[in-house]
Length: 254
Picture 1 (cartoon, rainbow, N blue to C red):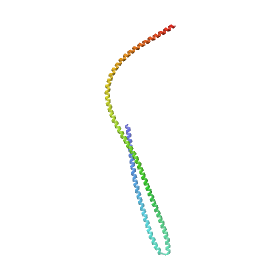
Picture 2: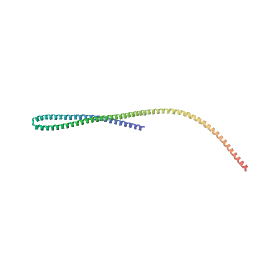
Picture 3: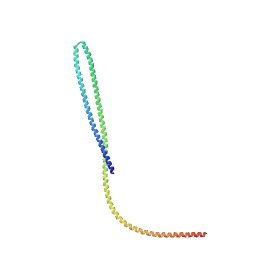
Picture 4: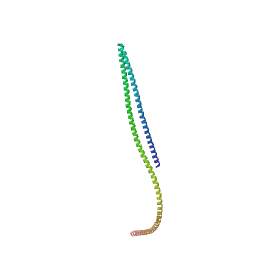
């Protein structure tokens, strides 16, 4: 019984240690997920700020280029108006080439800006989706861990109640055993005293009865011996008579 109690105590201690390990792991995982979510949010804010700064710089560079180009075009137009017709024709072709090149550069810049903007939108969408997925995963894991913790807690409470009931029953059994032992000793003492008194009376009664029985047995045996002797003598006489009769019959027949 002591070995079983010790084994149950070790098993309950191991269960409590396992519960504490699971709870600490869950607590550390939850703290790590919260810190990771904070880091992800901070990274998204920093990246957004960097992208906005790059877009502002690009817009500033484009505005400066446009302003210089417009001033240069105005000066060139003014100079072309003062030059000859060939110079005007050359300027017209040059302006057309420059405008075409500028248009291509602007179109390329717009395409690059659009691609960057679309990438930024896609990244933000993916970040939001990842954040939502991580939040859902964290909530599901926390719900699962909470459910497991509640189950383990209920099991622990049940085990503690069983152990307490077992301890109380054990103490009650020990008290009952002590009380029963005391009662048994006292009752045994009383029974011994009563038994001794009864034994004395019984011995006295037995001596009287045995004396009477011995007397009756002796008388019965004596009467039985007399009856047996008489019966045996009668049997012998009868056998002798029968033998004599048979012999006489045989002699008569011869």
